[in-house]
Length: 185
Image (cartoon, rainbow, N blue to C red; front, side):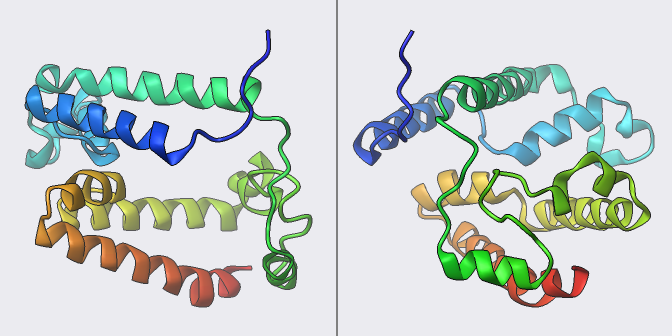
C-alpha cells in the first residue's frame, strides 16, 4: 500500500482545521490540549485536593476521543506517512545546536540529549521535566488556555486575550531558545 509522505498543502489542511473548529463551535465544545489535561486530572482524582479540578469530567469525555485521535494520528504519521526520521534543518541551526551539546541535530525528530529514557531518568532530566511541567501547567492556567487553544481558536475568533497570550508564548519560546536552553546544556 502506497502512502503519501509529503505534508498536506495549506489549501487542504486549512479547510479541514476550519471544519473541525466549526463543528466544535457548533456543538459547544472547546479545543485545546490544556482542557484535555483538566479532564485527565479530574479523572485521576485531583478534585479531592484542588477545587479547580472538581468538574464532571464526563461532560468533557470527548477530550478522551481527542487524545486517542492525537495518539493514533501520531502513530500513523510516524510509522506510515514519514519517509524517514531525518529532519531538514538549516546548517546554521545544526551548528548552533552542536555548540550547546546536541550532536547529530536533524538526524531524528527527537534528539537523544533531551528525549532519551536515560536522559529523562537522570537527576538533571527529572528536574528539567518537573520544572517544565510546572511552568507549562501554570502558564496554561494563567493564560486561560494553551497554545493550540489560543492560537487556533482564540485568534480565529479575533479575541484580544488570545493575541496577547500568543505573543507571550512566542516571547517565552524565544527566551527559552536563546537564553535558558544554552544554560541547561
